Length: 211
Image (cartoon, rainbow, N blue to C red):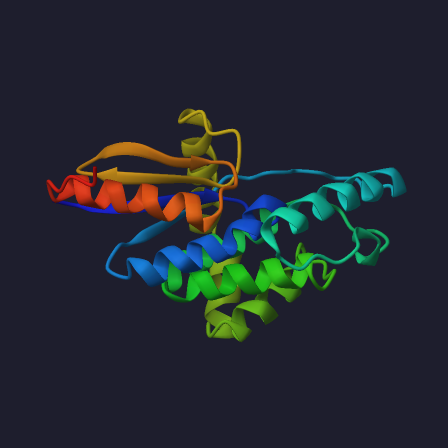
């Protein structure tokens, strides 16, 4: 029997930042269960954030903060010419996943924290390489892989898989057993909601009734 979780997310999705403690709780409660990270590609912008867009983001981030308890800075703290394009950060996670899947969770949280709590522009390659080094990756290896054609192909494959499956909202957490997928959550849910669902799914795989 093969089983794992598939976590479909975007590092610059605020609800995914809110969901980060839930992923931590899952990894702690079921350390034997592999979690495969898939990046979805939330936004592809080319123009800098306007003041109106920052105001809308501020309201949205405050709502996520109230529900999740995660720290959020004011979007006004983001650089003046910040372009909200999530592809670079997604690509960094693809590189992290391929180089060392264990370290990718630390990299994910570092990128999210720097962006949401620190107002750092994590769409810049130099910033992402710095953060990858903080997560324990070898700087030159990460930089080389970030610009590699195989990485661009891998991120395109993730985006395509997400679209083909009809996943439009993040975070989405899927449970996969012997090739069959089960939905644990589409959208933010707290650990109190997700962990019992996961426990029932794991128990079902062992033929254990939880009723």
